[in-house]
Length: 282
Image 1 (cartoon, rainbow, N blue to C red):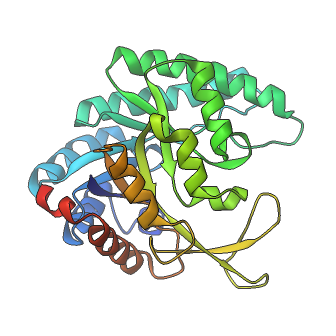
Image 2: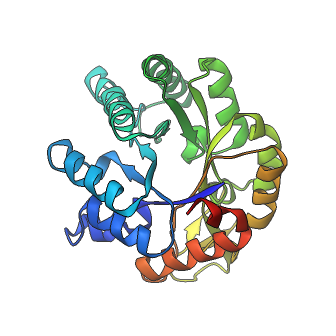
């Protein structure tokens, strides 16, 4: 396994214009990452393609994954077409820059759109997206996230419904906690389909703690922490990944309360401690 970092870990520096994607790559190299996960919401192909190519070549890092930020639960056909275009563009960028994985979402709940209707649009969009990805030898990896695909059984249902070798799982170890599900049993369901992993962690805290996430079922409250410092069982998940022969990326997606650069650097260091062989790939 190799250790990467998602740009979302340091998103405030992209959002406020302090960093470009190339600056983020330099930072990721400085903290010991071996690859980066870039996102379509921070991407301008005209300026980023040459700058990112140069930064990857200069640092020796790889593009581990390109993340689409699609949402198929949209009321208009034009909006759903835009979500599909986001995935297709992400596939093109991954292929251009040497990645084989594109992270995708299902969609978010909206007022006035029923659950069954949302599921239908998601399945239709992912089916078309997977066909395009397969034509370019790229694998889409559906992240467990939100109402429609937050739980392992929901992700599994969509993967089976689309029925394509080009749709697999981004196993986000922390996100399961936010839908009141334990990551370990979730691994049992999704193990055969995991092609990308987000190393994320949350720690359960009392209600009223600043900066909390309330779980989907309202059963608990969590704050983000670095992997191994929370309740996701990062060490157990890494052991399970080793057990199935997983050789892909562990991509840090830090959502803790520490300053983002410091928290992300800590997360990378902790993951190297869990995966000693990762340093052989550096």
